[in-house]
Length: 113
Image (cartoon, rainbow, N blue to C red; front, side, top):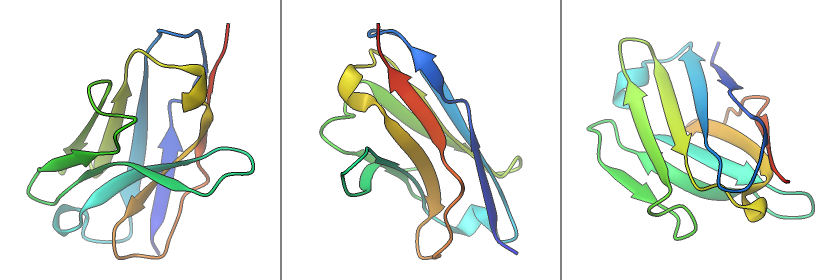
């Protein structure tokens, strides 16, 4: 079955960095666009970044210039490098294979001094 396991979250000070990972299994990873979403308390889940199966990327305005999405097809893993983190980046981060309905458990990112 489809599994998405996010990791790498934690508590970081403003201006710090984190690298999130999402290990995928149960589907043909290399043919799917992959994306990172996030959800803050009381807010709707929002798209942060997407990477196509060919490797092209797009970002939410809030992530441009600070976050980088990448993928490793042999490892079936998608990454989100987050730099210059801000308190407003605090959220649970989820990855998703676009077109599939499955979500992982998410990983909490907290940006606070």
